[in-house]
Length: 326
Length: 248
Picture 1 (cartoon, each protein chain N blue to C red):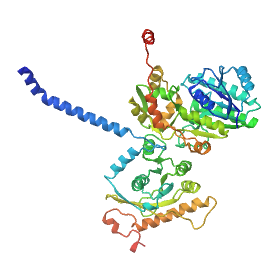
Picture 2: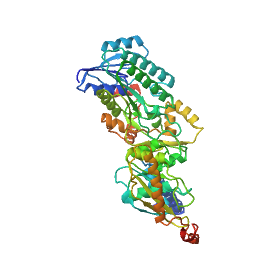
Picture 3: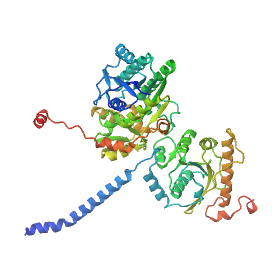
Picture 4: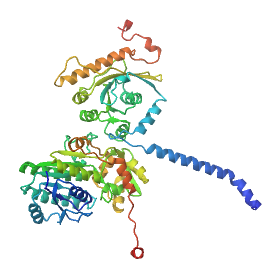
């Protein structure tokens, strides 16, 4: 297996850039192209990047069909309140999925599609399993959960129609340096709200581990859903304690006020993050180990420690910066 | 040399300074304790080992639990341990804590509600939802899981064992082990006696396997309870033959 053509949608984001960077080092990858609204966040040596706004359907189809990829890695998913508000994120995600997966279906060489999904797809309804496996039914209870559910359904329908394998990676919340994440932003606030009555555990995944999972899935031509989750778990209060933040215990109705204040402070709490604070979010990642040999290198606690270890943005007046530089 | 009035002021404020310093020390150590108490980690299932250790230590003020037959519990593999339960006695919880203390392995129990604040608190202690799929996943992950039989008023006999949960052990091919729990309300002593894993005389391919295993577990539990002497109150009431002359 060599000379494989791989298309990465969402190559401009942190996760997409990392995936592209890892794919460049893979001997089986012949040529690599990517599509996104923004240019890649890191220097790529071999990859060809196309800057296409989500929704430019004709240009997307033209670019993808001209490349005629064997494998499409679809990472262009906008988590609500990570880079765009919920309404815009939903629109961009739908547009990207329709255009890119639709265009991929027109490619004769296509063999496999790998799409990004999330643990939010299982939902957190009453009496839902603490650690769902991939066999559990999808029952999303948040906007983001419904978004990733739509992507999975679209990809699976296309896969069935044209007879290619479709693998979906259900990622825990992705955190890492510079990764725009609603959860990461909330946890790094000086004072962080948490559910005093519940404070359930949740798991996350480091961006490097998530990127490695995409590469493994593409190489293996994955044809099933897999949970991608770091080992271990942590509760919101424990995360706050690790970060030395001020815990703000909330019981119920005041969450509305807390969400409004966080919104004003620039760290909005979308419904899937609030759901996680109230109901937790864990998953069984054993299947990914069995199928892909995927072994995350960073535990949930370590990811949270790194979250607080990243330096904050330091605002330097332009004249001072100029003096320092010159 | 300082002014005499300043020396006098030092003498007068000395107790206040000492008291302030002492209070600051106490507050500091209390804050350190809070930090230590709240800096625990939870495992993949949300069990908080530090919290479990503290609850176990606190429960020993009331109960002095001895565990027998711990050699029947697998060292590394998963197992379903079925205990008899007295109403309101939280037998599965304390049995899980006691077996965990005896084996040195984290032990979970079936039966946490999915409602805050009780549900999340029991999850910290190792509670699982009473859903067969949840128990199946825990057993498949080589966990020890304690299941309580239907509660009775006394420890004389065991209640019905939920065959749907036992089915999780059958599917994952882990041993189902009976364990009798006996406690005396007016005494500190309590006992958890773990029996040998259930082996059915006849292998079944279908759902009869879990039904028969559940029945066998109940019978073995009754036998273990008989060996332990049945229900006790710690009072002269124990001498009365409630079951008829000679206990027959």
